[in-house]
Amino acid sequence: MTKGNNYEISSALLLRVVAAAFLLQTAFLARAVYAAAPIPVVFDTDITGDVDDVLALAMLHALADREECSIEAVTISKIHRLAAPFVDAVNTFYGRPDIPIGVAQDAQKRDSKYLSLVEIRDGAHFRYPHDLLSSDAAPDAVSVLRRTLAAAEDRSVVIVQVGLAANLADLLESAPDDISALNGQELVRRKVHFASVMAGAFSPVRGNSHYLEANVRNGVAAMRQFAERWPNETPIVWSDFLIGVAAPYPRESIARDFQYRRRHIVREAYLLHSGPKHDRPTWDLTSVLYAVRPDENYFDLSPRGRVAVDHDGFTRFTPGVLGRDRYLKMDRRQAVRVVATQRTLVSQPPRRP
Ligand SMILES: [Ca+2]
Image 1 (spheres, rainbow, N blue to C red):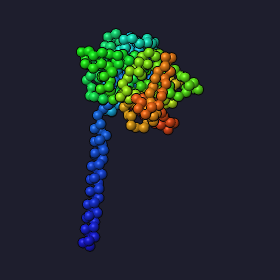
Image 2: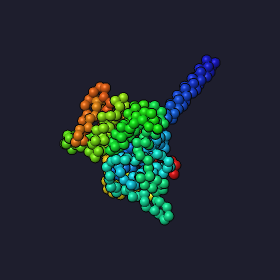
Image 3: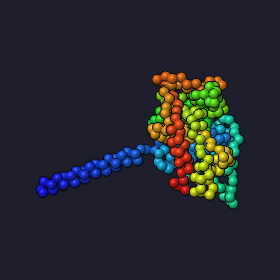
Image 4: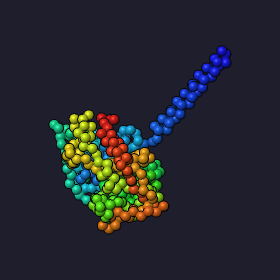
């Protein structure tokens, strides 16, 4: 009897010890997960023509709401009077009205099907409130980039470039000034963790092995300069044309997921651009997803190598073990997960209404 009791006591004790260890481990893991500092992100976008930039910016806000990233600045790489006000309106919609916004000084001008949403008034007020009323009132992108990088921790910033390379090319050319004693290349080398870039085509597109992707074709000189002058020590991960095409945004999401607000700037922009019967490729979203969650295996990475941009805008990848560049790869199973994750994030209601 006594032995039996001892045995029962010790097995009960053992159970409690195991349970306590399990709880401790869980607490430790939870702490490890939640203690990860938000990744500081700069979003460089040509938000004007296509609507994937709008979805990508919404997704960044959702990730910021989850404290996975912080949006340090948004810089715009095309010229349009309403591009900066539109970004300000999206930022305000998601409760972050004071994110620095910079605009390109010299880049392609582009019409837009959706930027005029920011000028709509319902009664006396803007439907989508914002206080930056014209891109002309925004500071130039290079000074915003330099200020953001100068203030950042070393090797911390992830730059997401999902348009022309106009701003990053100009940043790399920039000289020391009263913002920083470092030139543009030195600032990138010191402060940037890596760049996540939507551009190029690294495998044949519909049988065309010399496909000229739009973010390169519409600003070849800038993309050449970016690819040539970006520091060798700072990785670039490229999401090429085919990745976004293989993970289209589901139209059902536009129909159903945004009804938590009667007026939703993302839904309205999508409908103005693509209509209700189109699954838009998610080019820019894939670069955001990789930038903030690089270790989640949404994608595979190519071997290391070097991307060069030809004079006609063709992106040429040459493998090399010490190379700075890699590009995203995605199989069909990964694509299913990417589509679902992007949908969840883009349609996530703002935490700060
Ligand atoms: Ca874009």
